[in-house]
Image (cartoon, rainbow, N blue to C red; front, side, top):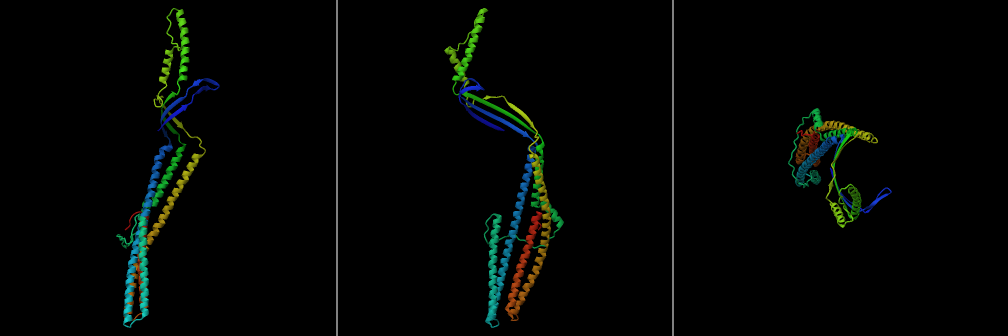
Length: 423
């Protein structure tokens, strides 16, 4: 639908048609309105809602994929914060152990059973433990700030995280998980929606070969008003003069046949002249909005494109290539998903077994440290054995923490791939 309003002005001057001149024309003021309704029916327009729905669905799937990716990133970062907090707790235990060893070495030195070298070696071990604790605390602060950036809310260091992740043996079936991933993976769903939208565009471009119908209805009105009515009055006076001459001739004929003459209006009569001017003045009004409506107009147009400079063929070819690329992208995502699901399953299984083994190794290292401290307390071992045992215990504790959280991160990644929780 459309509506328009036009105001115009035409200057006065002689009216010419080719080489001929037809008197003086006055200046005119014009006002015209036009209201039109136009409706086109074509294959492209019919498929536009379908194409729009397909594109909207593809956009929604991309948004869902981005949301799922953000959730996966937040989960991984949340686990990183918990891992950093566990490292802080381990570092605090290490500082406490090394501090106890310093006190034991000093006590042995005071009773003459030890040497100052044992004390210094224990103090070095304690200092290294304090450095690792400071670094672990800094890691917690930085990981917390990064988590706040992901969730969109500033998080201050020292924030207590309440969610816990238990180390449980996973019961995973690769075929079932892969089938679930094919149904639920957000990235794959977005690729499929994009492929459907591309195929819909192919169907839409093919409709360019079909004819189209165009229906239109229009209403129009206009008003014309002369700026100077003198030329119009003169024109009417000339017509009245011609009519007056014809009337006199008819009166001669009527008198010759014995009939009463008719009353002829003489334009030279001032009264007649004033009547003509008044009539012209009355007709020359209405600008700008006293329109004279024109008859309703309506039409139907059928058009069939015959040759468009190979544009249709090019559009169809481009749409087909885009649809084919989208299908290949879906296949690529399926292969990527299959490989990543299989890799994630192996990582989860390996991570669980590694965490179990590291727990055993950590317990053995703790027992080794206990025995070394007992031997050192009774003078059967040097401080080197104690510091070595402390170092090995710290390493095994950190390795156990890394193994446990690598398991949790691998399981979280697998959950993101299959699109549902597995705990």
